[in-house]
Image (cartoon, rainbow, N blue to C red):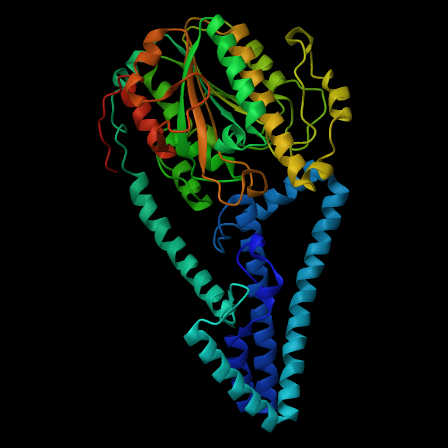
Length: 520
């Protein structure tokens, strides 16, 4: 099998596998009992490599990377939870049971098949030996001359390459863990005194907002872009009339298609958090996150609003959040929208009522995670009157009338269309909230966490996401005037592109923070 779904085709399977030739030669040389044991073991190994190949194909399709044998098993539980939220518990249990049965049958069938083939070889040793020699000569000849069938090399060594790549991946993962622990201990602002942290934002209510799956494709893909671009243009003008101005650029995310927490932690920690082990290392460290900067300064109260969090969240300490409102702390009585526990508009209204709209002895630094643009993009909420939100019951009719998740998941074109609509909804809800409730001291920083899955963004899409800073006070945007960002909510195609982990230090520097390195 190929490494990606898009490379699947008949020519892929009309190939001469070198491993089969070597295996045949070994089996022919063994007595009966060792031959049966070796054949069964070979079938099991082949089945294991097949499962890993399937996982690689799935991970590339959804997360834009291969499966990591050391780190990624925990994500299978997240995938099951996602399916349960999208398709229901019964369908998910049936799919899980079917998948487990398929894998068990695969192992049994391949082990039996190789044993059976070894018996055929043993019954016809002369013919099998000649056939093996001929196949070996053909394989060497095709490999030497690069013979191809429909663009695919006829001489294959896919199983050996897969085994080698998996072994190297495990080795690289273990080395990376040790090296990254050293990197995480170094922090350019780790020892900066509190009074020298973001002095140019003192007195401002600073809000960091992540929009789920808000990627470059939403702005530049021919299917999604027209609607999203129109929304960004309309909302830019609406904010301008309300006295707000914005600048926007691009960040290259550490993740793709999912694992949003890697994007959140990369942008806020200043470290390249590209896998689960790195995430655990960072969360267990005292590295200074961008949000924790505000708590350390002593000049802000810090709050998180995270409707996607539905269990214990020890990361609260790393991000320096004094209080977190999770999915159960916002009083929502309406329906879930697939994975998303509540519409973004409701989340933002509760943020206003419970946090932003209350009197405080200090300004606020808030981290808000918006979830309505999370896959499978069906059903999608619609905007309602802000005064009509209540406890969220108003969304029952909207959810019932929306697209079924299974219908959207099964249709690539529809997935792309609905994804674009979900981004329009999230951007509209956020900017209407700012227009309605923002003050002269409100500073909004919002960005995407990653691109949507390859089925939506394309198989060769970048990992870039938009980022915008919006404020009424012109001095706030003057501080980033040298960044070269575009005016408005839509970053230009040629606007600067930074790796996401660079954002923390550039933001801190722009707003007057003094570096005092901590070297571990």
